[in-house]
Image (cartoon, rainbow, N blue to C red; front, side):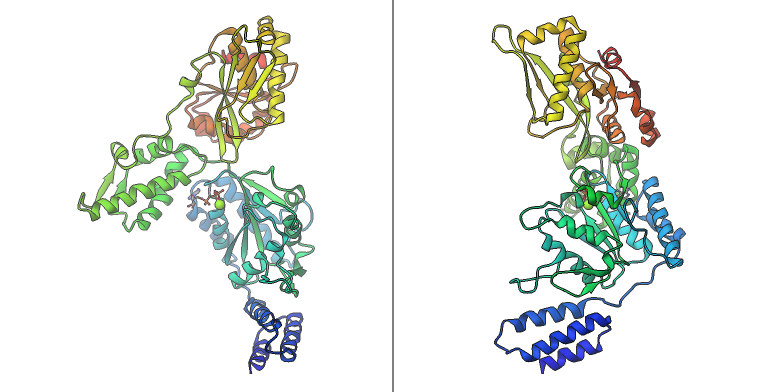
Length: 532
Ligand code: ATP
Ligand code: MG
């Protein structure tokens, strides 16, 4: 009978003792339950789920750290500090395992490496490389939009349509108890009335608890202590503090144009050539073409759009060959880009935007990486009765305060500023539909207003970032590398940076610093002198 069948499978399976006991109890229950009862279906599904789990399966780790580093190097160009950090992590893990020690526990333990950075910089694909480097199975758990604790920990079996949670499903998919599990987009986990997934994730990531993880569906304890958990995130702000405490952050801030060209040539192009059904003999895309694609057809911190553009070109090549419009081999050179992709999408706009007084170029970090933004200030026409300050562009509270501070500073330091009080001033930060916040636009706002007062346009090759205090001191800000990469992408040549951010320049690639003049300013007066 079916029950005997299950009994034989449970007895024959390689199960930990506590699982075998629980499974046999279920088989007993199955025997006692009438065929008609809906419970029969639930019990069978549960038994199938338990029997499919790789309870005693473990893959053998590759023990060679040199080899691991070689795998990381083969899969990704550049990213030296990231690879170094991952190599250290693997080496420490290996050494502790050899000495019979567990993973380091507790706060700030580095138990979980989190790869943090803008889209398309290779966070997910690095996770995959780590698995390859360790010789382990890889599973990605997409956490974007997960709002329900049961998604992580499963539903109780009495629940209609109950399923185990994502962690159990990941282990089952991996087919081993020691895979690399990538918790992808951990910053996009939300909480609502169905319970907070964060609590469940905390338990999963806690070395003191995760050897006895309990999924609500599975009920039997699951040992997650051999799993290597990695996480990825675009931004840190939306990650709950306790979760952040468990993670060791590794930042990927984006690539320079040179780096993008190398990545495209060595990684993206070969992959997309193959995807289009072509070979490397069939088609050549020249290096100047790759550079133009990176510089003018795409403007991003990572390489996702660049990869898409390559895919588009190669699809068109394949189609043209099929339609007898051309014959292989094909070479795609700079002038051909217009035929394949139309005209360039991104041309430097700073010169045009800052041509009138009252507009200054700022640098910001958004979820998509660094970007330039323009702060526009204008005076209301005389006699309209307007007064005070109007702020638009979906500015957050902190950014609104920066505008007030800029205004107050100018009122007490510039006699012409009286005009502002009487006539009313309007400050707008396009794009109007994108919410913005943070204090780092202080210098930019002050400069835009000062430009308005003096009637002198701001230098178009200058971009700036920095918080301003009421007395005009320039305070340090975050995201220096992302901001400087964005300035460089946008064709800016001079950047005004808070004096106290000087140490952060160490993180910025030399090739970018070589093409930028960076002025360190301590007082907003210095910024105004340089920008106007
Ligand atoms: P998102 O935040 O949007 O999920 P991501 O950082 O996870 O982005 P990936 O999907 O990992 O980005 O990377 C996009 C593509 O770019 C992948 O095909 C990846 O292999 C490739 N790529 C990114 N960086 C590099 C690199 N340094 N070397 C080689 N390929 C790279
Ligand atoms: Mg990703």
